[in-house]
Every structure is written in structure tokens, then in C-alpha cells.
Image (tube, rainbow, N blue to C red):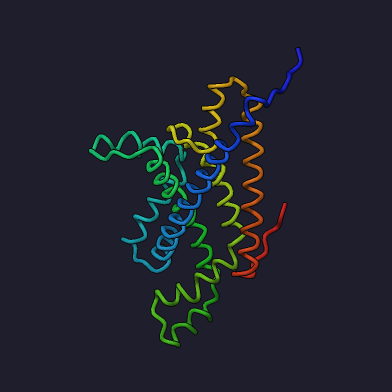
Length: 224
């Protein structure tokens, strides 16, 4: 028995899938930006903080990098209501992905802090820069130029990782694919179209990031 593909029931629902893809991009973007913010301060704490500052950051990084992201979101979504904190599926997924990204981005940006030449830091101190000014004008630009390619790759992985939001009923691309599949029972066709959309948005994001890196940070990203 050969498989016969029939997309007639899928084509009218493509705009619905594209709406889910847009939601996937939103979640990934917000989680990544939040993770960058957490990671920057985490890297600062591990670089400049005392032992009582570094230990909580180490515990945070260790927990979120050594447990599955799905389990972390399950805890946020199902355990927090026990303490009276009720979150929507979207909010729980966004918080979970942000905290997870923050742990990994702490490690990535820590490597960026370590790669800054001591002479640059001393020059900033000679000019009277505060610690925050040194981070803003010396360290962060260096991090973005040096680490932009791996940061871009992490962003792409986070975009694909938003598919787990479907487990919690969030109607991003995978969630909407499940909905269409339950209506049409054309599993192969539905998820084939969804896969193509994922490929298109990741390629588009890669091209956009390559342009941003080249223009703003003079960083080169290898394309495909």
C-alpha cells in the first residue's frame, strides 16, 4: 500500500499555521532577550562578585543546565499554583525558556568576559569608567563581536525549541499543527508543511542575524 499525499485540506489552513510560526518567533525573541539580560548580570556576578554572590549564580546555572527544559516548565506551570501563583500556559513557557536561556547565556557571556584583554579594562579604568560603564562600552561590544555567531545559533535552537509549548496548549506552530491534525487526520501532510515553515523561518532568521552581525558588530556568520 503506497502513501498518497493530499494537501487539499491543509492549504486553506496555512495562514493559521503562519500565525503559529509568528507566535513561535515572539516567544523565542522575548526569551532570548530576557536570557541575555540575566546572563549578562550572571556573568558579571561570577566575574566580579564575592563568593556569596557567585554561589547562588552557580546554583542557578547548575540547576537550569542540568535538568530538562520541559521539566522546568512543568514545575513552573504545575507547582507554582500550589503557592497561589497561577500562570497562563504562554507565560509559564516564556518564563521557563527565559530562565533556561539565562543559565546558558551566563556561561556564554562569562567566556566573553574572560576573553577581554586586560589592557582594555585597564584603559577604561584609566579613563575613569565605572564598572558598569566598562561593561557597557568595552566588554559588551567585545562579547557581541566575538560571540555573535554562537549566540545566533542558540537563538535558532530556541526558536525550534518553542515547539515544546504545544505540550501546555500554547498554539504556536507545533500546537496549531496538532489542532489541524486532529481535524483532518492528515498527519504526514500537516507536519510536512509545518517542517517546511520551520525551515523557512530558521533560514530567514539566520540571514537576518548574519546581516545584523555584519553591520553592527562586524561579525561573520557562516551561512548554510
